[in-house]
Figure (spheres, helix red, strand yellow):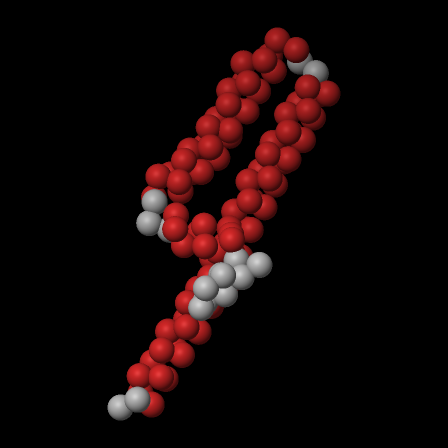
Length: 103
């Protein structure tokens, strides 16, 4: 679904509206750091008590899954931003061509 002269999708429109809000990026970075620290603390605190390779395997798999989810979310955002940039650049080029032709 596209909207307006740029043909922006709903996701691209949302990204454009939120692009000036740095608190969203800071919050996302905070989530990454907190999840890594929480996993590390849990591993350090509980590992000596349990002393089991199954426990370590569980934490390793959990870390891989959380990291993969974070990377996928980040990659999807980057892809959406690239699409938005291409549409904006195309529109600027159209406007510059029209202005040069009108002179």
